[in-house]
Length: 588
Image 1 (cartoon, rainbow, N blue to C red):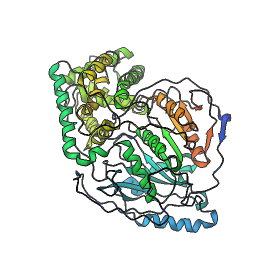
Image 2: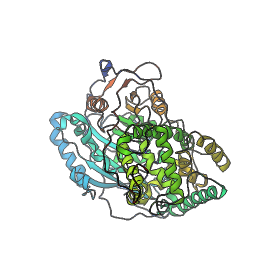
Image 3: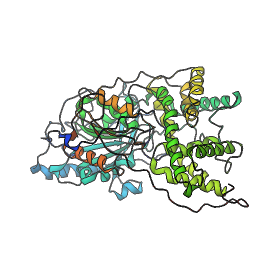
Image 4: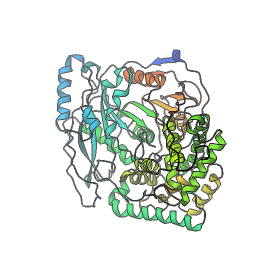
C-alpha cells in the first residue's frame, strides 16, 4: 500500500467499491472551533543515527532506553490530556521559550545522509523502543527518525506531524519534507517527523530474508501445470524459512499494534502529549490502530486511501485482482485512444491482446534474460496505481515493441522491484502475515485464485504469490485489532473511488467507525494515495483542516461528506519509436 514509487510498488492491501457521484458543496463547510491552545514545541531524547548495516537481532541484544525527562510520559495507556504535558500551550508571549525548546529538540539530532532531507534543513536521529512491548525491560531496538522543523511564529505553531507512506514496509524518513507540499504554507506550522517503522530502512535491525528473491526471470505467476505451481510454492516456503532464520525475535513483534505502540514512545520522546498524523495507504491503518489504543493522544489526522479494518491480507488480496484488472483496462483504453502516438492498437481489445501476447512471448524468451512474464506483469501493474504513470509506461512498451532493446524494460523492472534488497517486502510479509490469520491450506488459496483468475487474469496470481509466504510463516498471527474511533477527535479521510490498491469501501467503513470523521471522495478517480499531488480542490481542503480544523459538515448515511473532481487523464508524450532491424513499424 505504498504511496511512494518505491521498492515494491505492488505491495498493497487492495479492493474497490465505486462511490456515487456527489456534487461538491463548499457552502456546507463548517469549521471546527479554532484551538484555544497551541501545542508546546517538543523537546527530545533522541540520538543521532548510527551508520550500521542491516542485521538480524539476537535474543540477547540489549540497548539502554534514555531516561524520561521530568513531566514526560512513556505510558502506553490512554489519556485525555491536551496538547502539552500540562494541557496548555505556550501563549504568544512565550514564543522565545518555545523557540528555545525547538533548539533543545534538535540538539540530539544529527545531519541526514539523504540529500533531499538535507536540502530541506532536516535533522535525523533515533529513538530506542522495546522489541516486545509486553517486556519493556527486555531487548531494545532503534527507530530512525527525521525532523523538518516548523518555520512559523511560535504563536502559530501547531505541534508535531508524524508521517507514514504506507506499505507495510515503506521507509518514511524522507516524508518529513511533505509539509512543503501543503497549500497556503499550512504545513509550515508543524514539525514534520518522518520515521522508518521497526524492521524497515534505517531502523535497526532492518529485516532482510533473501536479497535475490526478485531476481528475474521468475516462473510465470499463472501456473500452467503442477510443476510451475510447485515452483512458486517452493519459493514461498523457502522465503518464509529465510525470514525465520534471519528475523529471529523481531519476527514475532512486527504487528501493526507493535508499530502503534512504538509511535506512542516516539510521542513521549518528543515530550508532547498529542500528535498529528498524516498517513497514506497502510499508514491509514496504522493511524486507525493508534487512535484505537490512544484516542486521547490524537489531535489531527489526515488519512489518504483508507485500509478497510474489517479485512486482513487474504480477503484484501482477493479484492485486488478485479480492481487492478479494471484499472489496467482503463489504461488500455487510453493507450488505444492515443494509438497515433504509441501504435500499440486502435481499440482497447487490440491493446489488451497485444499486452498478453507480449507477456506470452517473454515467458519463452525473457528480455535481457531478466524480464519474463511475471516481471512484465509487475512493471505494468503500476498503471493501476497512478494515472500519471500512463504515458511513461506506454512509451516504454512502444519502444520495446519497436526496437526490441531490452535495456529500458530491464532497467524499469530493476528500479521498481527491489533496488535495496528485499527489506520492503520482508517487512511487508512480516506485518501482513501476523496482523490477522490467513487460511493455512493451499487447497483454499488455489481454489479461490483459480476461480478469480477467470475474470481478473492480469493480477490475481501475482497477488496470490506475493502473499503466499503467509502459508508457511514461522511467527503466529494474532487477532486483528478491533478498530474504533468513537473517542477520537475529528479526522479527515480522503479516497478516490476507483483506487485499486485500497477499497473506497474502506474509507466509508473508517468513517462509520470514527463518528466525528469527515470523508472527501474523488468520484471516478483511479489514483492511489494521491493527496498533495496537484488536485487543488482536495489539497485546499487538507490545508484548511491543518490550519484551523475546518471540515465539511457531516452528511447523513454511508456517504462521503464532500467531493472533488479527479484530475484529467494525462496527455500522451510523443516519442520516436525505434524500428526493429529489418521490420517496418506497420508490420510490427
